[in-house]
Length: 304
Ligand code: PMP
Image (cartoon, rainbow, N blue to C red; front, side, top):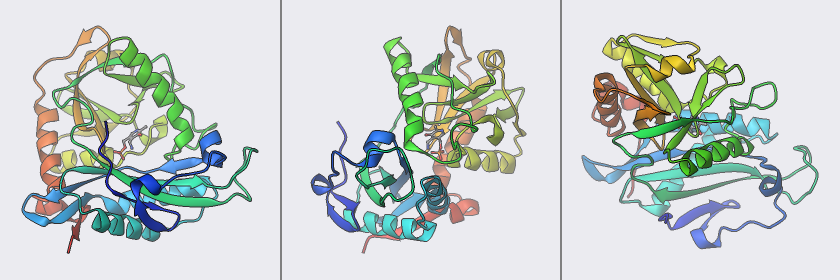
């Protein structure tokens, strides 16, 4: 189903994707003691010999900080350096997704972080739209997002994704495309791998970082772009009922970009989405480096 990029970074070397294999006793496989990132890259539409990576700095920084929760000291610089070399080795010619992972590579059976080897790997795959670009139908999940007192939610920790996996499968098996999870306070939190926004009376509203969301990099970009466009934004707790009667609702993420929500449970949202569409077109232009104002967000990698 996936078309993987031919070269992976594994155990400090670039190797064919098929040769990047871990042991059955790898700690991370058993206990979820890993953390990952996810970046998108595209061939520069203006310059086919160049790859554009969106917000490499922020992604490197987030993964380095996630690694701290695993007691793994890896700098954002090291992560970024390997990612840039990874892109050069693979020479991608289509839109793609990069998956860097820090993980407990030691072989062990006790759940712990100390005295356990760690490692860093990177692989990639070609990726077009992750969710249907014309919009998705969402179920309110019966699974709740973890809370920060029992889980370090500012890390993108692999173990957390069991909740996303349960929620996604529950949604799909009951005829929806995607799930919206509440936080432990019963407020709207996020989707299975995306942040969530709603629009009411011209204002863009999204849960704040203290609402147990993942601190999404696309979310941050959207808030900045919206403010620059003069669209009022607000970060605050959102009730489920507000979402159901919102003028527009959309999801944001590296993979999902901006994906409109068409329906939540049995509440159909309006088909007009002026703000979602405006943000979507500006975000696309930004990632394609067509908006000089945001060129600092786009990292250029010459392939030769
Ligand atoms: N929430 C979760 C749970 C995610 O996995 C992701 C994807 N990384 C996001 C939100 C969106 O984050 P970003 O915009 O940084 O991709």
